[in-house]
Structure formats: structure tokens, C-alpha cells
Amino acid sequence: MTDLSGNIRKKFEQVQCLSDRLRQLGWASFTKPVRDRENLPRHVHPDTFEICCIASGNVEWWVEGQIYNAKAGDLFITLPGESHGGLNDIMNPCELYWAQIQLQADTGIGGLKPDELKTLKLELIDAQCRVFTGSAKIEQAFAFLISEHEKPDRFARAKVETTLAQLLIEVARACQAGHANQISPTIQRACDMINAAFNQPIRMEEIARELGLNLSAFYKQFAEQLHEKPTEYLTRLRIAHAKELLRQTDQTITQIAHASGYSSSQYFATIFKRSTGLSPRIYRKNVKTEG
Image (cartoon, rainbow, N blue to C red; front, top):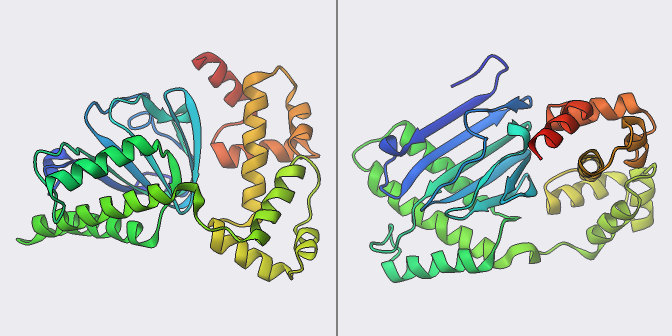
């Protein structure tokens, strides 16, 4: 389904799913921020894990009152019974897959035996992973599940069960790795430099020079390891800081812009709305209303 803004969504509800384990399966591509009052308001899945795979862009959700940001290459998981939703019901520009999966271990899934499924389920719960780095295999498994649901044949149910088992195994492996996925000392140093000075003028050329890299090599290594450009990383830090100030203080928009590294409140407002779909003033009004 494509809306007037060019955003695309494919969603299969439980009665359409080709596995009894699936409560919902979907893929969406949002070219512009959208307020999604149908899917993002506060809700709970009593017996269901929800696994989201971010293919591009970034998303911002809350779970049990805590806010999380997931970027391209990340997985985001909510556990059964957790209250969750999209911050201010806004979906940022992004591409993502999701599956709501019931993991009761009375029977297996694909090649996973009941005891193996039980162990996997407990590992996901005990690890308390929320946002962590995924893999190409996970995104490929999601894409395959969508394609099988779009054009099912007489083998589709068996193929979906097998792929669902493979997906869960890869998610469990990624969860175990968690945030320990390898980031080179060079790129970690770049992140540390940006983190320390995000609210000041930053020139990526100077950071690259400090690291002993030319600019194109710096951008390439950063994007390969963190799935976003260093400028995108910087913007995320600045907008996250601005959101915190909008939620927790009564500073003016101009003060918050300067405290977040922007010399112009007008430019700050433009970047903020591009990232969140809301102006800083409307964002502040909404979070104070919800609080």
C-alpha cells in the first residue's frame, strides 16, 4: 500500500501469515516522516516477541517509558507483555522489516526442536537486548519471508517455517554478540572525538586528518562499521541532546539550538523537523502533554 506522500507499507496480519507462529509480518519504506496513529500508539503483545530490522534510516521508539534509537543495520526487540510504541507516533524516514512471533515451545519451528526453541526464547529474555547490530543474513531472511507471503505456492508454508527458524537463530547469535561487535580503534576514536565535541563546530576533515586518513577513506570506514555517515552520527547526537533539553528544561529554542551545536535556530528547526517530523515547539508541546 502506497500513501499520498510516497510511503509504502506491506503488512500481513495473523490470518494471512503462512506460519502459526507469526502474528504479523511487514515491510515498510518511509520517504518522509509520518504520524502513524494506527500502528505506533502505546500497545502490548501479551505472548509475542516483536523483532524489527532497520534496513536504512533510523527509528525512535519507547519501551516501558524508556526511549531507544535504532539506526540502519540494527535490530530492535520488544518482549511479550511490554508496553511500547513510537515516540509521538512518528515514524522517521527509514526502511524496516518487522515480525511479531509467538515462541511457546510446545512444538518446534522449521529445524528447531521444542527444547532448542525454549533455550533460544530464554536467551532472548535473559540477554535483555533491546537495540543491537544485526546482519545481512537477517535482512535477507526478512526479505524472503515477505516475498513468500506475496506470491505463495504449495511449498510456501514449509519454506516460511524453515526461514523463520533461520531468522531466529541469526537474531539469537546477534543478540549474544550484542554491542560487542567489532569496531576498529580508529573509528571508535572518531566516535569519541565526535561525542566529546558534538555541541561545538566540527569539521570532519579535521577528524580524518587527526586519524591519519583522507576524508573519503574516513567516510568509507565509518559507514562500513556503523552503517551511517559520520555527519549522520553527529546529527543523531545533536538531535537526541536537543530532545532531552526540550523534554527536561524550559530553555528557549534558540538556547537549545546553540547548546546542541547549531549556530542558527532556523537551521536547527529545519534539521529537527527533517529528523522527527515535528518542529521543536510542537515536539516540546507533545512530550509535555504526554508526560
